[in-house]
Amino acid sequence: MTTDVVVIGAGPAGAAAAITAARSGRSVTIVDRAGPDAPHLPETWEGARADLLADLGVTGLAELFLHRHRVHVSAPDGTRWATVEVSAGGQGVPPTARLDRTRFDAALADAAAAAGVVHLRGHTVDIVDPGAGGDPASGTSGGEPILSGSRADGSRWSLRGRFVVDASGKSATLGRALGLYRPGRQLDPRQAVFSHWEIEADRADTLAAAGTTSIVVLDGGYAFVIPLGGRRVSVGIVLGTDTASRAAAARHAKAAGRSGEPGAADSCGPAAVLAAVIADTPVLARLLAGARQLLPAIPAMNETFTCVPAASRWYALAGDAAGFDDPFLQRGVDTALASGLRAGGLSILATDPSASAQAAVLAYQDWLTADRAAASTHAYDAAARDWRSSVAGLLADPHLPSFVPLAGLMGLATTTGRGPASAGPATPDAGQLRELLAEARATYASW
Image (cartoon, rainbow, N blue to C red; front, top):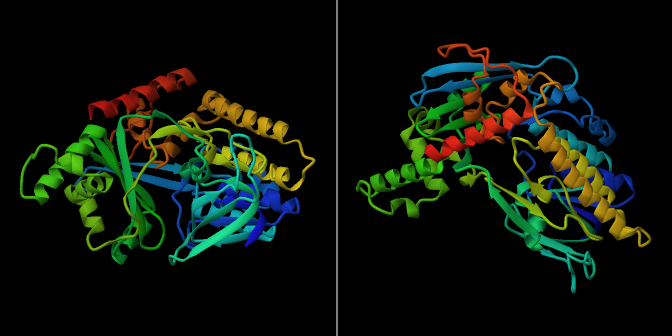
């Protein structure tokens, strides 16, 4: 199979790139590892570039948000300590909205289909061949690049394209395959891991009726439970590294009928840590009793990275696939949409020999650098929006796993239930916020 443009990933960056390229008269195919009914976790979105959605043909914006969101904070035995509720009214994008990514991505997929994009679901990319003599550093492909991989049923597929957009998120499929991946710094000394389960119907009904995310405060960290629709839930943990090692070691020793065996933690990876915490946390053990695990234990990204160069005459990297910075300071969906539009526009380099590749590639790289710099300086500008509402909306976002201890340090969330109410301190400036973030992340070192 041959197409003008291959896009890896169907999230905001991939959909934006595909729609842009298709509207320019190119044949476009999205290769998406997710199945047709795959759910997505909700995500925090500032909506700074919401205007781009109209350009992409996405309508009904107000229906894509979770306008009312509750977060229950409880003890390991399920005793509720506090409830934080966020309500966002109005028809536009509320400050730091909770985005329903399942509906949002479906709306983008519909817009891509309307533009003539072919969408291959359940297709995983595992081989990228830039062509004989291809060199990503110099921007040459040596011929039409070929992508291949496996389908959900295990069969193989291959696809030849003239231009490739990698919008695979933190997987950075193309960047890793071409040796462009450059690891950065660790974000904080923690271990975060999650998975999805299909739980018993009565428990799912209870969660759906409550309409909440649950945070379970643990010794040395916390766990989260996020309903994903139907009987599916996402359950994950965020622990200080030492605490995670101790939990895995204790579980390993218990299973072997021993206690405190030296080196037991060495044989226990993220899956063992997650299993240990679930088994030893009553509220989680009750929820997942009899449940079917749908995904393997997945460690969360805990380091920054960049992929360089981010574009050439035959490829472009968009969204998190181009680089992952501090999620607390990143613009997420906004950057994904804007970079996807630009990456899709670069597809002209492969189909129009007269296009100036060097100037276009350098301009895109400069834009990515400037966007990251702007994100780190604009974050949580108190003069720009209702900052306290933003904090409440971010409290339990699983994409920002360091934020719960940060919110605790700030004492910002007003609560109901057993927890005391707090009006919080005066609104800090950007510099104070970064200091608080550093303090929050430092707490993991002592857990």
